[in-house]
Length: 424
Image 1: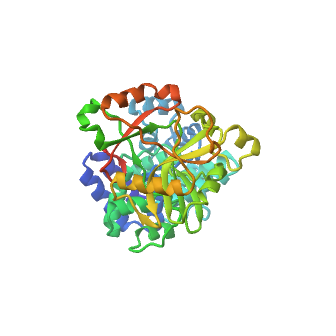
Image 2: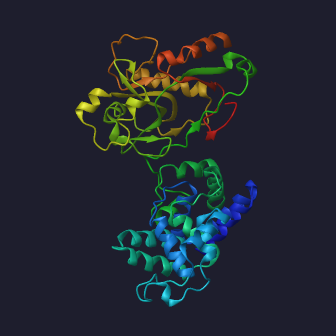
Image 3: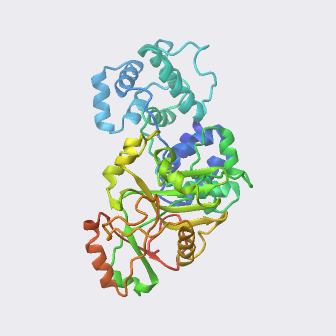
């Protein structure tokens, strides 16, 4: 826990990207694998479940500090951070009367590791049957931590640990530790649960085993902050609809098909019709696109789509009410080869050829009447024709009427990057 606490305060004390990456590299180079896995989960924005109520934590801290609850609240009003307030009020050494667990049942190690504090302790708190049992666990951990460590642990305990570091910086640091390119590490981090030390060690392996259903890091759009004409000739750009759906990757590899959202959630079970459609694609194919609620070529909107999100089982009735389709706008992998380094124009040409060979044509929201293949679950996102920027302004003006959110502009000569990159 001391090692992670030092990292937390180092990251909190600097705005320098270089210093943050250096601190992360130092931590991951020295931390035990199980602690590093737990830290990586937190640094990448993993969910933190609250293990104990704030009211109980306040009460126990006041009792351990020997002060009335109202005085604790007054201190909190001055400090402004509950985790810090409680840590500062607690005595450095707690007396046996503070209510700690007996020595034979308390956490055994003298120096608690992060994994033990986050996972073991939280699990024991959840299993505790009554308030007194939870109190004994919390006080027992307080006895083993210093003030700075207690501040961080309080944040972890209440699900409020926010660390000022981006996922891309974490990938850069891990890449330095593993001796690989940052882009490669960003790909390795996609869709990884990091529940065990073994998974963390595999992440750093020079030649990791292929994870066949792992998605690629998503390339995200950025808002246009200038007039379109400032981008140069319109012929340098590909214009598409900005669909009102859910961004996803359709991953078709050796052992089946997986559907990943931009938030790295595996949602395959919620969209069985997309799995069926993707089964006809060749192995070693990864499509980037949008999941839409679509019936007879009529866009139903995101509100309808939300009824399908998060479902483990989808009834026939729901599938009939909210049928879904995947509209593809990029080809990231073909025949097992990573195509992200190719220019968009080349990737687009291969995407069109692939989908045409499997009977999937462009979905045009301007055609209201159902077409001959109106029930297909796989479509191509069409490129919008334009000989000048004025035509694209016209397309954009009718977007809402067609049930889409606007336009996306993509540089034809651009590669597929990671995160938000302006000008691409």
